Length: 171
Image 1 (cartoon, rainbow, N blue to C red):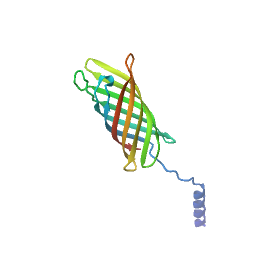
Image 2 (cartoon, one colour):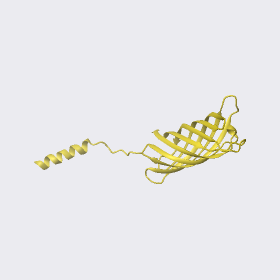
Image 3 (cartoon, helix red, strand yellow):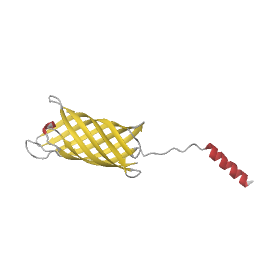
Image 4 (cartoon, rainbow, N blue to C red):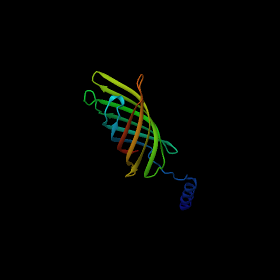
C-alpha cells in the first residue's frame, strides 16, 4: 500500500510540474580601457580612459547600458593633462544572444572637463557598435566603438571617437 501511495505521489508531481526554463544572467558589471580621440572637441587632444560598464537585459534582444569613463586628455594650450568625466546611458540591440553577441546602439553622454581655472560641460548623443564574446558562462570580453556629437551653449558642435576593450561579469 505504501508503494502505491509513493507511485501515485510521484505521478501527480510529474504531471503537475511545469516545463523547465533556462535561466540566463541578465545583468553585468565590467571594466574597460580605451582611447578617446576628441578631434579638437572641447579644445582637447585625445587621451586614454578607464571605464566602468553596466548592462541590464530588457527583452527581445535589447539591453539598457551605462558606461562611465574617466579620461586624461591633453590641453593643447597648456600642454598639461586634464581630467574628464564622461557618464553615459543608452540602449543597444543584440543581433545574436549566444556566445558571440554583436550589437548596435545609441547613448546619451555627458562630458565634464576639469581644467585649471575653468571647466567645460557638454551633452552628447552617439551611435555605437561592438561585440561581446563569452569566454565562460558568466564572463565576456568585448570591443566597442562610439562616435559622439557634443553640444554646448554658444559653441559649435564638437565630436569624439571612442574605441575600447573590456571585460564583464554577468550575474
